[in-house]
Image 1 (cartoon, rainbow, N blue to C red):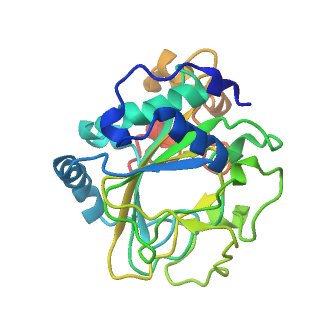
Image 2: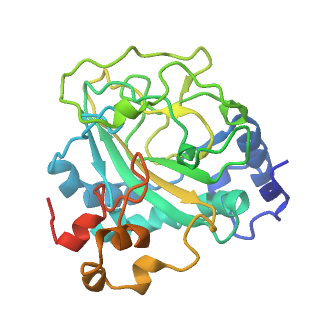
Length: 295
């Protein structure tokens, strides 16, 4: 049994979001299937606030750089620096109830990005979100991922595809699992692999305003978009509180001082990347902050 499952039930009133379901029932599904979906969480007004805040960055139309990001997708990183309204999603009590219970109350936000799939986007490689730790499976997850549907996610516009129960797998992988080549630059229109549909996969279709919560060990992927509409989600992700340095070096030493250190010291302080992309800042290598480059 996951030790986190022994923690007491959340004290916040979650009844407005559970729609008659008990938290424990939802938690049991989360434990068994590796994910759970809640509909009608955001109001139309809240959805419009999120869309309005994202619009300038979507209109900029910066496309993904590789097969993992998706060359027919916009990925918007560094969201809290772009608009404080995104804090409303990150701090939502239903989401945090799962994060606190799964990872502990010292958990951290370790990523938050928006993903906008354009028509014609292909399926993403299969992956699970805490794979970077390279620890043998099966095991308890080190992270938890959430998926807010800012638009409807449908069978045809790229709803996230998941393999229920795959969080319990050992080291086996589905056909089409991500490889190092999936993180190399790819041009729009360049041929990619087959769809590699897993027999147990389902498409997590959700009306706008819904929330899916998934374990960091659940195999999933972004779907392909064969429709004529865009698919927009925001995905805050959390990790265990101990997944960080003992001392917060990035806060302890100002960047202007770090810029004068040898490169290896800069890397040790955190201005580096653990493959394939752990440690990015606004989707870019953190050393760009030291050079002042905004490319």
